[in-house]
Each structure stands twice: as C-alpha cells, then as structure tokens.
Length: 135
Length: 135
DNA sequence: AAGCAGTTGCGAATATTTCGCAACTAGCGT
DNA sequence: ACGCTAGTTGCGAAATATTCGCAACTGCTT
Image 1: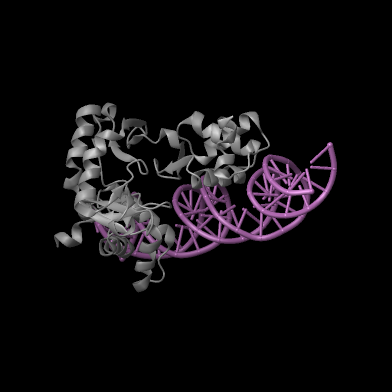
Image 2: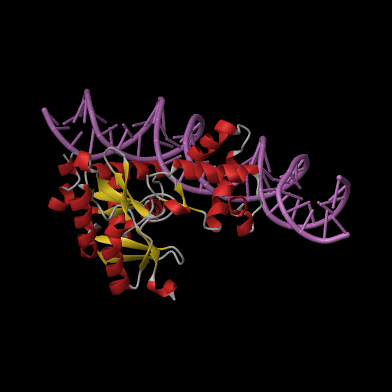
C-alpha cells in the first residue's frame, strides 16, 4: 500500500495517467517526453501529450523523477532512483553509457573546494567518444 | 592577413555576414544563436536569422566555434579558443561560471581508464548550485 | 570581365513545449 | 453512499526554436 500512496504522499492525486507516466519513466530508464508518451499510449491510447508534459513536470517537482540533458534536443527524464549514475554520451555513435557517480567524486570535491560549487553531475550528460568510437 | 584568411583557409568564402557571426561569437563568449543574431544586427540590421544558424553550423564544421549545452533550451556557441574552461551553471540563479579544465583532469582520466571513454568536458555544462546559492 | 559555386534572404514547414479553457474526476466531508 | 471542490485531463491554439526550399546575389577563380 505504500506503493499506492507514493503519489498521494507527495500531495498529488492518484490518476491513472499520472501512474502510467511514472511507470513509463521507470521502465524506460531514460526517455524523452515523446518516448514516454509513446510508451504510455501502448496501453492507454487516449492519453494526451500535454498531460505527459504536465505530469513529468509535476513528478519532477515532488522529486520522483528528474530530467537531464543528454542529447542536443530536449530533456530526457529518469526515475529518481536511477539517478545514481552519470551519462556518457558518445558524440559519434550517440550511445548513452552509464558510469557510477563515484568516478566523479574527486571532480565534484574539487569544484566544491575551489569554487564552492555544489555539483549535480547527473543533470547534464558527459560528452565525448565511447570506447568503441575512439578506435 | 592571416587574420583575413582564417575563413578562406578553411575553404569558406569570406562574406561579411560570416565574419560578423564569428566576431559576435568571439565577443560574446557564450551566446545562443538568438543572441548572436542580435549582436550582429546591432551593426547589420539586415542579417537573417537563418544565416546566423547556418553560419554557426558552418563555422562549427571547420572548428572555429563549438557549441555546448548550458541551459535548458538550445545550444550556446563559443569561439574555439574559449574552449579551455568548463561551464558551471547554477540551477537556482542561472549564472554561468567558468573553471579551468584542469579541475576535471582527474575525472577525465578516470573515465578513460575505467571505461575507455574520451571525455569532452566542455561540451555539456556542469550543473549544480553556485557558491552564492548554496547559502 | 564572366562564370560557377557557395551564400544569403525570405517565407514556409517542422518540431517542441506551453497555455487557456471547458469537461471531468479523485478524494474529502457528511 | 452522495455531492462538492479543487486538482487534472483533453484538445486545440499559441509561442518558440530550428530547418528547409528556392530564387536572387556575390565572392573568388580564371
């Protein structure tokens, strides 16, 4: 039942659309609003794109999902639980790899020490060339 | 004269618009296509937004400018010479700070060692809270 | 001076995200 | 269980951002 209330607990109404959006984000790992909508429509064709956008925003406000900037276009969303890694986007092949956040610990510490800057490494992708494309 | 030929040397025609776009990018440090257009229009009102977009793309192809993802919307462009620092974007106040690329050296090395990933740290912004907003 | 190819301007087409508003419904109180 | 109220949804239109087609134009080479 804690499951059923995770939305209510945040002060949100429990609508089917909202649950579906959240479920889709969790299943997809990372996804653009468009992809989330597509996923949701697989089971509920009637859902509106605006609703997806609004729910992603709402869910983000309560901390259940977050968005990051992976590609050139729009944002992509993740479930909050997923945000324990950073995204390695390959500029050549477009693949998105993951790396545990620890590899950045040092870097984050440097920025904190030298600039007082509190870094959220997951928010933007790390851009470069993946191992396969380096060759 | 080397100055006059930096575009020609890359195989590009030397048009006033192109020079202006490049000059604007250099002056502005970081700027969105819109801002570049605005800057250019200050002296040459007739210039078209499409032209700005096309020139930014062209200049990027020959390596004179590069784009990075700083904010939530579109890309922002820099002169290639500027790409020696990374961008610390504050999620709260929106300020963009700079930090020398060295602070990430360790991090980049980690990614290279552990994942074979060749990082371009400048391409995406580093997101977080600036010193002022942390308080 | 003349021609070719790369560029520009302009408007329209796309794509993406937001907004207004009326209809709908989850959850509360009774 | 029933109805009320406020939060939500659907839908179409508006606001933004970016790209494209095409005809006119202009560097640059010869």
